[in-house]
Image 1 (cartoon, helix red, strand yellow):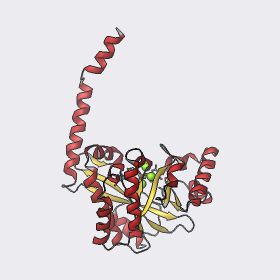
Image 2 (cartoon, helix red, strand yellow):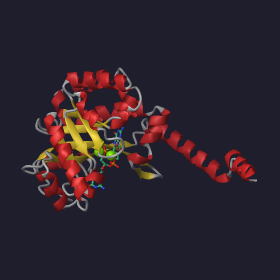
Image 3 (spheres, protein in one colour):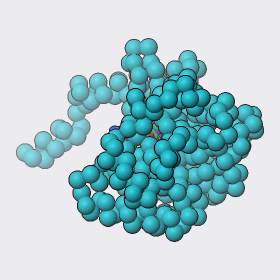
Image 4 (tube, helix red, strand yellow):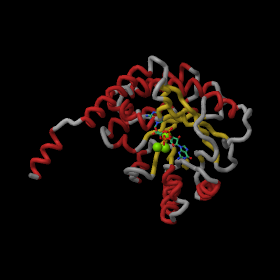
Length: 279
Ligand code: C2E
Ligand code: MG
Ligand code: MG
Ligand code: MG
């Protein structure tokens, strides 16, 4: 009886599953067209100096503006883009677009962008980055590439080689979302990361959890001993801000200082047109 049920649940293709499969197929098709239809945009979120609250740069975050789906956040399509391989073209577009934006801003403003693990196994990636920098005459030190620990799950030697070649170009490499997932301190020792970004969930947890505060404290100390700078993400309240600053974080990112915004609004911020940072 139980065996029969098991077989039934595993072998029959029910209506729900069919709908799911159709939804997924439609998403893939829409996503494939999105690049040619120019439906992707980058929003920019301010990165703030913890010491004087000045603007240091922006993180570029991709958005998909679909005519009927509306604004689709990256968490709802990046994984599909990775699975279908579309992330390669999308990723190249992000690199070019972020460099184009940064080149219009002053020298003291940097831009960070996110790379998927799948992009890191492409030996051509450093070349792509180099070409975008050259095309927009952007100094390498104005570009920062964010990767998560997931890059070490697959071909970790290959990814590490690509990261080292990127580092050799002179761009910054940040370890993103630290404190979630695998978070092995061993990754800090790879000699490729110049920055560590403490994940927002972790930053906010510190408000109610003394153990989390202690862990963040030791992460910051360790990062400093490797000469890495530390960014606290997801800073939403003034308390989050003072806590992370006092724990030694160099840079702050979060809704307290600004949500991800259009290139135009980011440029206004850079040029001091909008004097107040918080929305
Ligand atoms: P991430 O790189 O960790 O980016 C930070 C995310 O936290 C962004 O979500 C940002 O909007 C959000 N955030 C910033 N401040 C706060 C805050 O104070 N509170 C809260 N609750 N959230 C905050 P977003 O834009 O939805 O991006 C989600 C993730 O999608 C990113 O996480 C990144 O992993 C990925 N992603 C975004 N753009 C790209 C891209 O161009 N390429 C790739 N491969 N991944 C991307
Ligand atoms: Mg990031
Ligand atoms: Mg992050
Ligand atoms: Mg994240």
